[in-house]
Length: 255
Image 1 (cartoon, rainbow, N blue to C red):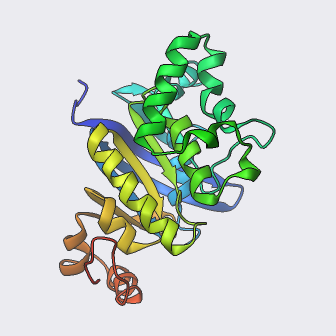
Image 2 (cartoon, rainbow, N blue to C red):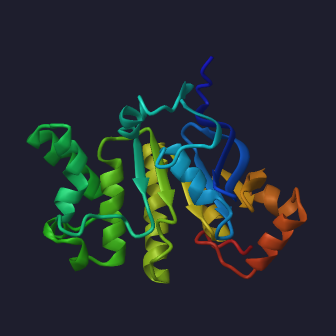
């Protein structure tokens, strides 16, 4: 029976490359309509987990379901149309304008020009992105503008799931803070299911309904932010929190 409160479920999922284990056996639920943040040090497996969900890579063991349906080679193309995906540098095609980057999949799927233009206007207002940016190429845009374009592209088909892999990691602090505020407002306004990767605990606290902390390819603890602060499940949790104690979160809370 499908659990309507869970959009994505991983059961005993692992990923190995030869003798290298990128993700150990992992069981995890991604709750519907909530923001789940994967956090941890570089190489801990958080980006691997995200790529497994969208099946850019296939699990070595275990299963992943979307609304209770197993992800397979046969259905992944259809399901990907219900998933928006944003990576750290935006992943925009440099030879296309921002407009063409945003609308590329809708044009491939033969959406009407009027529907495309209507959706483009909606998303430009939502992100927000100045209208003149749409006819520029990625090299003519600032880092923040490129990420807004990437977000518009990810949202264009009104996906059920939004995956973000360090979407703000390459931005300077002022632009990053502005985009953090805009992103959280968008998440709240759209009530999307979001799974986001970051290495920044204050950023995780700002966005997350649920934080999942990984170390060396396995989940160490998951729960709300205060669980990590007040009820650490492992000495590593305390070390990870203490390493970022001086940080100020965008909401103004001190870690």
